[in-house]
Length: 271
Image 1 (spheres, rainbow, N blue to C red):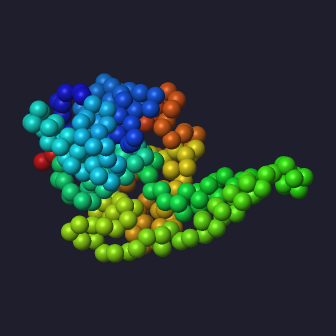
Image 2 (cartoon, rainbow, N blue to C red):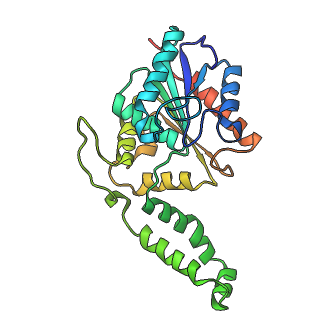
Image 3 (cartoon, one colour):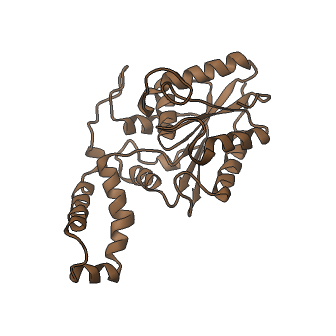
């Protein structure tokens, strides 16, 4: 944890299953970079992960953990008034679910990196669009197929992906209205969270990442809940065309660090 001086800090939510250090020390290094830039930050383990006791849970069940982290941070440092939630993959999903369900006025902004919206259909669609279609355009693939050097298992896999990908993203799950206990599919709740959130949003997308491709496909084909969300007021989109899912090189990591620090400094101060 970096000690707060400003009134706005960054809560680094960790996607699972992992703990607060992150793959290739990603969250440790991001936290240090933010602290060095004068941005207060806190990394947390969900219950059941890392140093946290309790039963392990997934990203759909961590609202109480996020709220408890903000509560504890403010108790220790009363000058902290507002928090930016930062999440990669299903931690970005958890952030959107949190603002949808809790409507916490302390959340001043969202940094969402390669948000997770996966279903069987979305994965198949992304694989067909961004991998299999490229292979089908390659003469070498057809030469191998016609010469019998492509196994039957690979052909069956392709046909299965094509069949699965034909399902409509909007019809993968029911469209029950929101209620006191929202039981809709998590992607619908995420969309509502993004649409209703009143603060600024930084969306960081990697070019070499299936999760990012699935998210873009969902925004385009996910039905009314997702339509127009990429154009919502206050959303800033940053694409890293060559980056992988976790921004694993020093250059990609530094780019994300700069984007995050600049975004947080631009979040309106508490009134």
